[in-house]
Length: 85
Image (cartoon, rainbow, N blue to C red; front, top):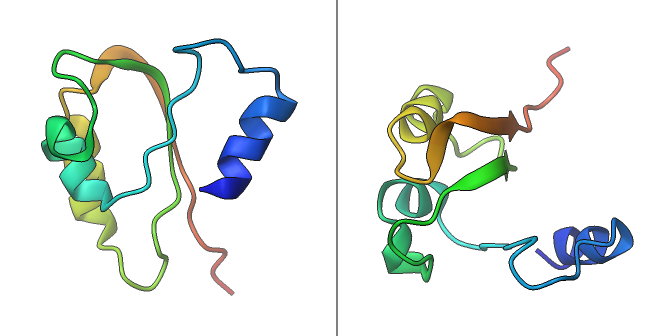
């Protein structure tokens, strides 16, 4: 989370509301945003997810994103995925 916050400042996302870093269980945040401190009714223009590669079930992650109240039809979603060799 510290890296993301630093990168946000580096990209000059410093004004209130331009960036929100949420460090929590990804499915909990996607399914029940209020439980991790995201106000009800909040939506995002961009969502980036960096789940723990070996612990995540990507089908659950995609389902969570597709059904999340945080995501609209116009939301850009980026999911980090490990390189397979």
